[in-house]
Image (cartoon, rainbow, N blue to C red; front, side):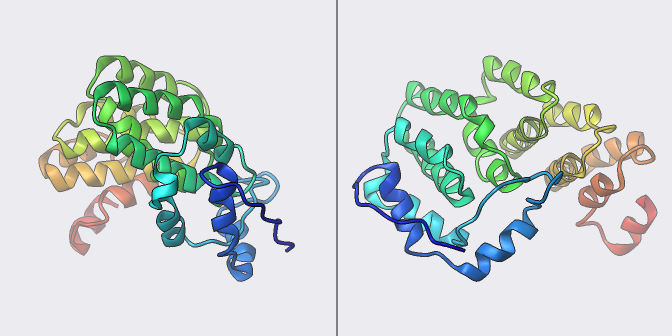
Length: 244
């Protein structure tokens, strides 16, 4: 694989990409397309990889020069064909959301994130950002309506964003929205939604096993197998066998 050429422009999307290019791993670059299903007809079709590992991407995102990267530069990173540029952009965006010192700042970041969801187009991109940016905003009714729009979109990644974003609510003891989505997606065609809903059910079980048990009692015979397996992953072997 030919490595893209670097050029020097500090404090920009190009500068972030230059840092990533210093850490290219050709073995990883050859492995990631298989891992993230980038073949024809697969969910990550056409995605490209530099081969930079996630800890290095997080380290770059935390560099002082990039923590406050302007949103128009973050947008350029999100538009990049290389997966690592998009994931690093999301790490930067999460940092900006978490460091925002007022509601207006958090709203600005979240609204920007929602406007860029076409580029949040693989499961790791969703799972690294949805509950950390959209999640806290779900405490407001406006964003709950946006969540329903994502769930109704028919788009795999927007629907996964909707499910994973509710992890924030689960952690503060609010389960209803998650349970509604889990029920809505019982008949979803894609296992990446089954796995996401099962994961969120498992997280509910960590908070309140009775709530999880009630959902299982209602739907375990109808639940996709992946959804059920993820939901009961932390049960002891005998309990897992019972539900399966």
